[in-house]
Each structure stands twice: as C-alpha cells, then as structure tokens.
Image 1 (cartoon, rainbow, N blue to C red):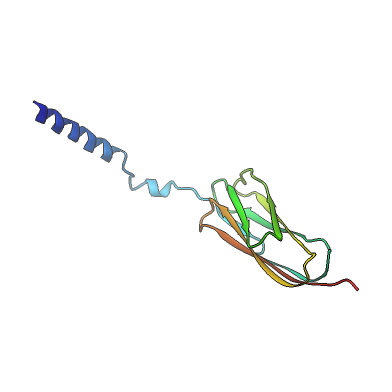
Image 2 (image 1 turned 180 degrees about the vertical axis):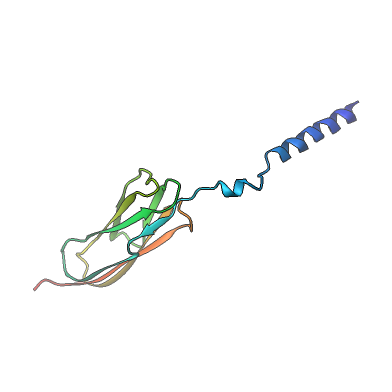
Length: 135
C-alpha cells in the first residue's frame, strides 16, 4: 500500500512539473528594455581648474519594457553620478548626470558603469578631458 502511495505521489509531482514548463510560444512573449545613448563618451576638452564639472548622458529606452537603473558605479570617487530611480518607459528619455571634480590638474579618463535591466547587461560610459591651471 505504501509503495502505491509513493508511486502515485511521484506521478502527480512529475506531471505538475511538465505543466509549468515553458511552451514554444513563450519565447515570443518576452519584452526587453533597450538603453540607447546619444553618446557613450563625453569629452570635456581642455578646461580650467575649478570650472563646472557637470555633464549629461542622455538616453532613450528603445525597447518595449520599462527600464530600471539599479546602480551606477564610477571608477573613482572624483566622479559622482546622479540619476532618477523611477522607471523609464518605452520610448521615453532619461538622463544620467555626471559631476567630475575639476580641482585636479591634468588629463583624465574615467569610466561609469550603468547597471540596469537593459538588454546586453551593464553599459560602460566614459568621460575624458584635460584640466589646466587658471592664469
């Protein structure tokens, strides 16, 4: 009796597993967010020490699902990101503000990593430029 009960349980468990397996049509129902930047590199050019360090990366969600930015990491503490935590709907634009500390002299190249649910994984952006002393 116990053996029949175990076999019945195993049969029910196996059948329930197959009923939730994805179907051939499920792969056509997936929606994705796509983050399309106007530019992936901002060149500050040659700027004077202590000048304005804010710049904007503008992007559009060209996908068909809401875009969520979960985190933005920079290559050093001299670069500070600011971005909206609200989802960017398909077709809408968003902005990522970057503020570089322009007290430092010399050439610089920094990376910004945008972590989101967008297709293709993390997006790497760059800022570069050269800071010279005021005369």
